[in-house]
Image 1: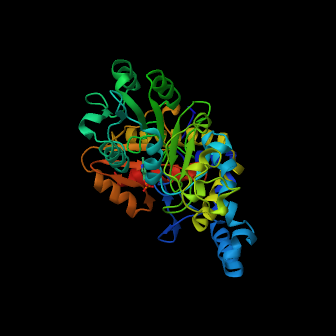
Image 2: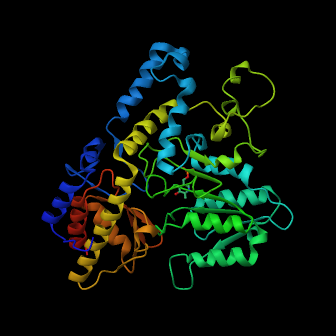
Image 3: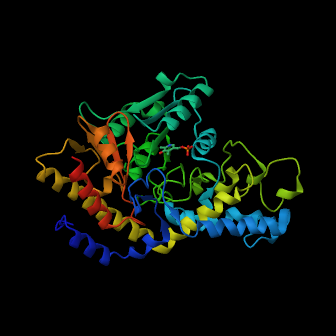
Length: 423
Ligand SMILES: *Cc1c(COP(=O)(O)O)cnc(C)c1O
């Protein structure tokens, strides 16, 4: 990855050698002045797969044709629809099929999982999380500790970057676990921080957390479909994610959960609903909740088929592409983007931007966060005017994410050209 060149020829030759090159045409790109945009916000809302419309139409047609009978007579019967997601999701997050299910929205799922996994008692009642977590996660954690009668300022321990830095030093997490581990009931962090793009060592954090006697869960909103995950092997207790970012499943689409097989036979408290009931006897409509096997038992409601139809198309593309191919390209494409930005910085005698995302490929996904000094919002607006779709986060960060499934090296080159005229 060291012999990059900031030229169209070079970018196109990389595209020709890209094992995933055919996947770009399976997605629909928005246009700007009659040309496809440079779409670098797959970390916010992934692009629409071509086949989504057909998948949606299949379900609408089955509904038209069968009405309620579609639960059993649809091409993909709705009664067991959610079961198709287990092998697909298992592949994406490194789990066993029994450990995953698609349901609800992300924040809803965080709450449902904390009902089961945040069990404060005695001196052990605190939650350890990263500072500047996504706001929804902060609200979820604060309201959970309040629900149990604690005060957030006491019960939530935030790990911050060190003075003057932007990234969290994982050693600081381990030190807190060493010193105050017996106070911590739960570690609940992002797998990849949404703001800086820092990827945490989930394996190590889980190990250290368990040694301290804590439960360990991750919000994988920015990790699922973006970075290698081995949730089962790492012994992560639980995790939740949304499907509309790197997983391209449509705005607000159905989210997902992971519960480690170790917990599935246990007497965990959970908020129950009929779709979590043992499917054999679900329709006997009897009193008394009998949980189904695995993560499915956390389901409450019958499956949102229309959202799931699109989710399924998107997940099948991941499996078809192969997770390892996606991660390899993620490393290369992100490194190329970094190279192009640094090259332009050199040629223009220094840009007013600093890449705060870690440089090491095992510490980041497909996102670079550009900290802008000075006129960041101006720069962002210029990029937008010239057909780059990126993401602005107050007060001064531009996030760009080249998604390996549909972005090309030529996109990166084009971004660089636009950036150099914009500065
Ligand atoms: C995107 C994102 C969310 C969004 O939550 P929803 O419940 O899907 O609206 C929450 N947390 C993190 C870390 C995110 O990145």
